[in-house]
Image 1 (tube, rainbow, N blue to C red):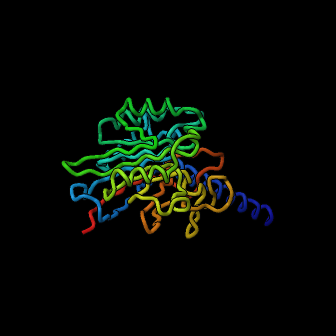
Image 2: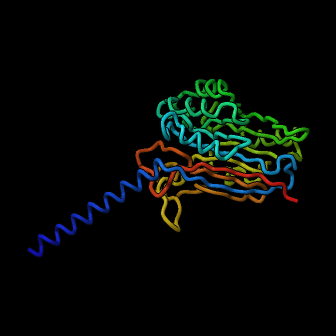
Image 3: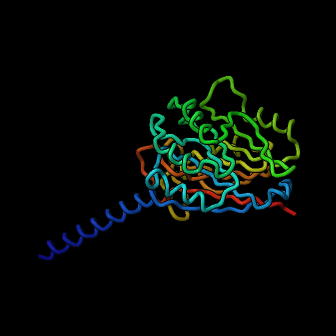
Length: 280
């Protein structure tokens, strides 16, 4: 009799643990976390003081509400001055069914910029997604630099192409040299999908890099952080938050979606808002 009761207790505890695990997986898939940063820069023009950037990365075709309206509404509530899409926006095999409704909801809200991720190149949908972005007013930057003006002041938006792209494209270092020659002394915002710039290019010329790619380490543990790197092996690196090179700040978004069979765990989808300040 005692053995039977103990078994029932064990089964009840197991069922409770399974329900908690399922709830945590669903929480890490659908409940968006808003992360906010305020960053100061000496070379930021005063006219851009308070400029808000909403950073969207690694959507991977996820929908948050019908036609992605829940995500779009959260973005609108941030009152962005710039929207930055840093790649891996499309779903599996280049599926754009969740992307177009989001772009339609946000069309005309503010200047928006997009750079490709590794999945756009791997899935062969680069031309299709760039055409879609341009249709809704999003500027696609493929190793290109564009000035954003407020009055007579401007900042440089630099879009670095993903290494999965064409073999003959310029390297990030070459792009940085070009930016330095053209816009030396100007505040530079660098958009790139990969999160390894501090390791690969610690001295690159920019003020702020926005990136993603790491999915927050997929599985996150309290006081530990991310566990898995992008190769699905142990040892996440530069997976979430702010990193300082001594020359610039790199912000890495945990992203909104996922592209591997291992589910996100203790790792809610992340939308990032950055407020730029002029350092006096």
